[in-house]
Length: 265
Figure 1 (tube, rainbow, N blue to C red):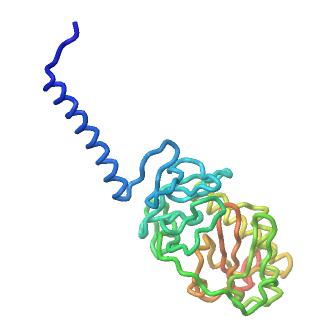
Figure 2 (cartoon, rainbow, N blue to C red):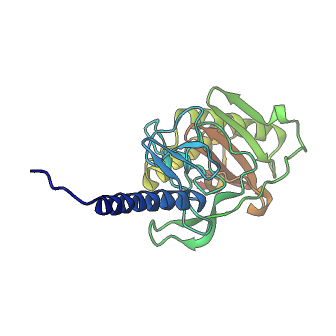
Figure 3 (tube, rainbow, N blue to C red):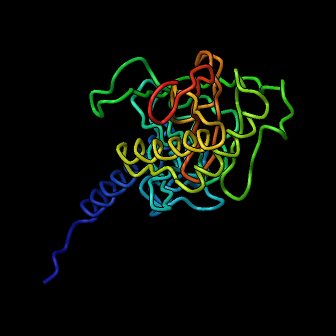
């Protein structure tokens, strides 16, 4: 038999449930006002009130990631949490907060931070440590016509960022070598080991082409992610940049050091 409750007791229970409901709504409102995102299945609502793709889900055309849209290898782009300024980052494109792209192939305008090298060695990877730092943009090199220092076709493009000691003909050769080598030897960003190995293969190809055409190759000073400059802070040398589907890369050459495969000349 159903239990009969006095009217006052029913009213008290109703008021109690109403209080619970109001508390839940108040909590949700407070979280939203405090900058947290609200869970909506596949999507979240960002601080600006716009829908965004949550971390761990594939990047989508026309919808920003809540964090950053990052290439993780195997032709896969995924929304990931961005890396805070000062924290260690992996030089596979830009995954820094206020710096990384929000959608695939859609560059973030006025990026404030980028993944840049430091003078330290990473305790985690045993190689040069990279951290998210304030982004700086170098002024364009207008000493030579851009059309003479740029090669582009499809999804890969190369350019001479700093001509340095290279002649105009050598710079044009390096641009073409970089385009061919990085097209034939894609940079693999699936992990740090593959990144270093594939970058070494692509730059090694450039040096081999230099030797085939010139009879010598310049000394490779550095190679890695292109974080946007300032390139003149790298010291003396010729710097070549290559944009690929897996990220933006550069390498620096000392054109005053003539070497051959068997050793220095």
